[in-house]
Image (cartoon, rainbow, N blue to C red; front, side):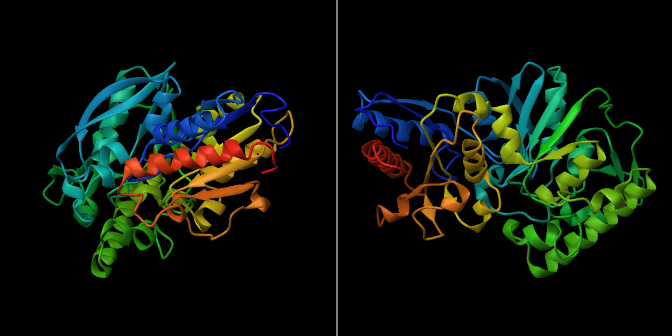
Length: 388
């Protein structure tokens, strides 16, 4: 980029994801922007577009983009009440696993791999329907359970019956107790577009499935992983018997996302989409990019998963294909596990890592993170006259 403050004002689009455990995407954008403005107040116009990729922070990003907040009270992953929000605009409701039945909603952060359920997400879907939403967008990241979406289905009217014929809400550890599934009362989603946003491509079962790959992150021991896998397979068989195409849905890419919520969403007719690209469209990234001379993006950690297509790469790809010509991209991250100061083959000209700017733990210190983000913003403004 050759534009410099001396030649005219520079427009910078600050479009980061959250720094998980530390700052929201909006807080990250604001800190970087304040640094830009402090260094070059007469030469820089900056605008913020907080982003998300379907994980925690998706509702917050939608609200920052102009959606209306609707308060919801749902059952958390282990049954405790959770006060959450959905984002609503023009018939589209955005909700997320993380804020309803996710890891962040576990009491005291204690992992409960066998007793957590996805019931709360189904209740949030019902809340969106009650608000008249014709499109329900579910961000599938950050789940606490591996229940194959049985909890969500129960909230939407499916009845899971044990051997005595009594209805119950299964958790991952009790899926094998399901003797029959009654779908006669399940909610009618005709006329409703259900979108499941996730960048996970795993099937439901097997060595690449929901339990084997993601169960350990949710606290499951080797023996518990076996129980969860058996439970998911049992659930598929019972849903097949109930008339759902469960066996075929279980094999589809993305069925294993969010502990099998992707599988349940597919059974309900959901369209599974790339979380990063879908949210870029939903939040208006291409429109915000218009007229920008530089994009500053970022996330908490830059690593191999980022390079497989997470949000910073999606941002760089869009900026590189801008109709008005490629727009340079700089990334500011919490930690750079790649150990490289740029990723030019992916369109990122420079990488700033907060962990290289201090010996202190930035994840546990949001104030320090904000200070370092502002410092990175000041350095970016200083470098505006050179190519990124």
